[in-house]
Image 1 (cartoon, helix red, strand yellow):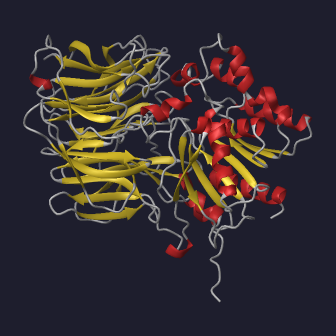
Image 2: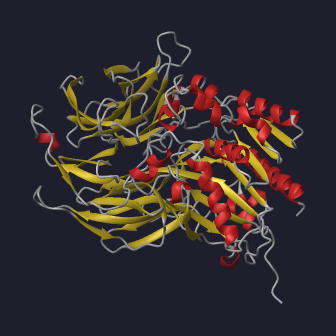
Image 3: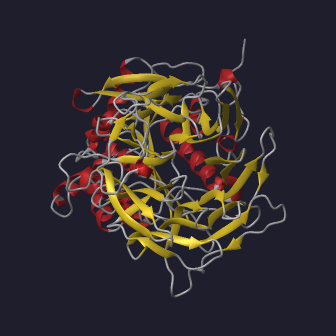
Amino acid sequence: MPTSPAPLSAALALGKTPSLKEPQLLNGVLYWQEQRPDERGRTTLMARDPGSRSPREMTPGRWNLRCRVHEYGGGACAIGRNASGEAIAVFVHDSDRCLWQLRLEASDAEPQRLTPPGGDDRFHGHLGGGVIDAIGNRWIGVLEIHGRDQLVAVPLQGGEPQRLHQPADFCGYLALSPSGRHLAWVEWQQPCMPWERSQLWLGELNPDGSLGAARPVAGSTPADPQGCSVFQPIWAGSDLVVSNDRSGFWNLERWIGAAETSAALEPCWQALVPMQAECAMPQWVFGMSTHAWDGEQLLVMACRQGSWKLGRVHLPSRAEEHAIWEPIAQPFTDLAGLCAEAGRLACVASSACNPSGLLELELATSQWRHQPAAPCPLPLEAISQPQEVWFEGHGGQATHAWYYPPIGGSTPESPLLVKGHSGPTGMARTGLSLGIQFWTSRGWGVVDVNYGGSTGFGRAYRERLNSQWGVVDVADCAAAAQALVSRGLASAERIAIEGGSAGGFTALAALCFTTTFRAGASRYGVADLSALATDTHRFEARYLDSLVGPWPVAKATYEARSPLQHAGRIHCPVIFFQGLEDVVVPPEQTERMAEALRGNGVPVEVHLFPEEGHGFRNGATQIQVLEATEAFFRYHFQL
């Protein structure tokens, strides 16, 4: 008889596979950032020449590319050319938070520092999210300083950041026109997050490098009656292209000749491909990209019902006509970081059976190749593939999840792990997750829930969570578990829930306010909403206004939904994991929650990590968390 495959170890599931980020093409060379958990989360710049399968590390050794703007960062490295035509990278080095420049085509070049160290009394703040202005021979990006963002320029000869524009609050996602004369970017103001209400701004750069007339040309502010958010402006020649969700879905629109239009004229936007799919994602970090211009054609990623597809858009010649969407055949359903150049595209791609890696595709022939970040340690027959599940969630609304059956098949006695994604404006994705396969290889079923509030299903689906965080997400996670139990796929007595950050809050709230779950795990999860409202970082300082209600007017609601205030309602075992450098969810929240449960006689474990922040970057930490969670659940479920 055939034998069942051996369980996947935590060391193979996590801790070694690099995370690939923000691919960029320049003159045929593909550059990307590679975050390495086995090097304590260090991120380095990689490059691969056309036709080669052997990458080169451009920033070996001590270099660690990391942006800390808005705490979550992204956009740590810009690739482009200087005024002399040399290919360069300008990146943020985490140890000193300074900008550094690297000449990419010089084999013996060493990075050179551009901005003064943070200890200089003249300059304090975080830099990132920039682009290279070849004409001005400078880097243009975001400086977060003194509780506000600024658009700044840094000369490539080095020097202090020079302010170009002072937004009212937040800004980012810059796009410089091919002529170098126009700059587009996104702004948003508290209490809104950028995926709730944001504006596209357009300004003209003067011959002396200063930013002239600048104005909003799309989107909405907190004061506008109708909410609209914008995502990732790019230039398609002289046309400006952006995603916005005024139709109810993030779809592409184009302003023909935006770089040639008088600043006094009102923008004229053309909907390109209206469809019930998302051509964008929540702007948690800089450097996100779902569409790209290769010099002649527009390439787009679109998410429909939680699954991503790749296509090209044939642009119409007249503004009154719609564009044509042409799918590009390729087998991957989880896509991110699209870039393109001269008939070639690249992105980070994975599927249910293929681990995350770099996908490169020639547009003329549709020939593609995919190079995984690391080989898959599992044979195809040992991979549990996601099954789409729709069930009746909160308020009777149709709600989505991906269900992974245990290897060997589901039975009414199978243990079930319910996963709540972070964000909470995130989504359960379909790419191969070895973390999920760790559980299915041990006889667990896993359900990854796209609870109300998730991305990938349109604005109305996201807005189910407005004022209902801790209600809709909790009800949907419980309903997903109950739906699988009712179908004979899991045991009602062996259901656990786990999550990190916002998913950790959902897990703790589900343990408080439902009777569905028999154990839980929280990674840096929110336990006290009131404390989060008054003691978190700037980017999310007013996020709870939309998720719960305005603080302190809605204080009673905060208390009614905070797990810490209702710890006495939890009667099942809980395990906690917390980084001591976390500024998003301070460690005190986890410590107070665990102490309250201990006082009620609830079995509790707490694991603290002195050098980790919000989200664990060190591979050794990730392995320890997974192993400890499985051992905790196995012990209490008597498996």
